[in-house]
Amino acid sequence: MRLSRYFLPVLKETPAEAQIVSHRLMLRAGMIRQASAGIYSWLPLGYRVLRNIERIVHEEQARAGHIPLLMPTLQSADLWRESGRYDAYGEEMLRITDRNNRDMLYGPTNEELITDIFRSHVTSYKDLPLTLYHIQWKFRDEIRPRFGVMRGREFLMKDGYNFDVSKEAALHAYNRHLVSYLRTYERMGLQAIPMRAESGPIGGDDTHEFLVLASTGESGVFYDSEVTDLTFGDREIDYDDVAQCQAVLEEFTSRYARTDDTHDEAVFHERVPEARRREARGIEVGQIFYFGTKYSEPMGAMVDDGQGNRVPVHMGSHGIGVSRLVGAIIEASHDDKGIVWPEGVTPFHCGIVNLRQGDGAADAACEGLYKALRAQGLEPLYDDREERAGAKFATMDLIGLPWRITVGPRGLEKGVVELTSRKSGESEEMSPEAAVARIAEIYTGV
Ligand code: ATP
Ligand code: MG
Image (cartoon, rainbow, N blue to C red; front, side):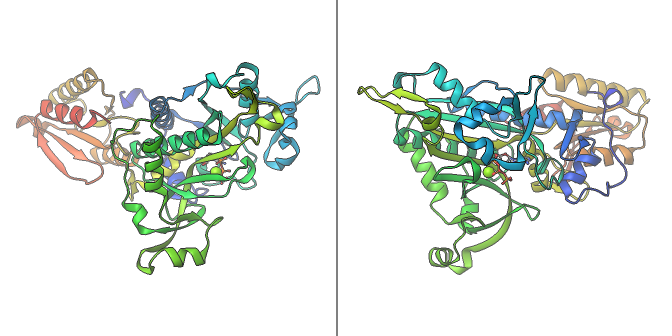
């Protein structure tokens, strides 16, 4: 993309309404624009990041064997009356009446709708296990929408639902989700720690939240410092292997790590030596639940269990805060100049800064780099505007592309350009070909 033809409305002033750094940087970098309280338009740069997060989620769901579909945002109130949640959900639910006076609602979550789909089509254990998911906009009329996309009213969520013939099988689905979520967040450059949590209006006994440690997080967290040493990495997991998934769950959840809802000071002291006790704040970027037959029973989602019985199906639901993640990643990765995107989610793979637009050699070298990078399947953002070098650097630093290639007449006389890491700030001179090769190498496997 050539910046002169792009739509990147960066702001010079720090917006006064934004209280936390990710919100400020998203506004300043021209990623979002508030449409009304807690509701945002995603401008091109922000949209690219959102799409990258979605792509990673889809890829990791596919790896775990989960199947994508798409359910609507608007739902019929009648389904929610069947589960008993229509009245229970309260003021957070946006209720709508259509022209025929039918009660509708903008879905805050989809347990009822997916259970209805399931009961209409599946009748036998032979069709199980089954996990269906979608990435769809949700609406929750939060009392205090704030912090930009972190606590929106309209927000994008991945929500998935497993259907299994027994509790045992459903707990394997739970573990499988835990494993796939660990991998998903790590690919986004995040450490998200599974913590024992409270189930809230979704209901159920088993539940973990995934928290990214950040001082601006809304949840208080208490944990054994050893949990921060754990990484999933690129280990190969067979998602159908019950023992393997269980082992990962135990590895990542056996140490004390709880949110303020479930924290127990006495247990904390008993289980964790003082030197390892940590109290901090965290951002909830996902949650997994096992809730058994809470929806299948009242809604009649029954299957033949192969032994002549009709039994209610065992379920769980599993959510990732896709739009919240954009803010969470920035909270975890920025400096005083702007965003520092992890390579997995960056909106462009690298920037090209032309220090002397209009200079024949500099323009030609930039064009050459631009084409060569694109030929490698990479998307560079080429700053081809007639601007001072300082302004171009400031924009690149603000929008946070992990790599920048700087091209100027002086370097070109020696046959070199400069490759700079946004994270370390370190620069290295090399030939344009070497810079392209280096960037292509960095992104293989990302
Ligand atoms: P919270 O406790 O933050 O209100 P929740 O526990 O009610 O969230 P879930 O039902 O677990 O939310 O939804 C799954 C994920 O969706 C959450 O882990 C979070 O990342 C995201 N999410 C929930 N509410 C919002 C919101 N208002 N804005 C943006 N993302 C949200
Ligand atoms: Mg939650």
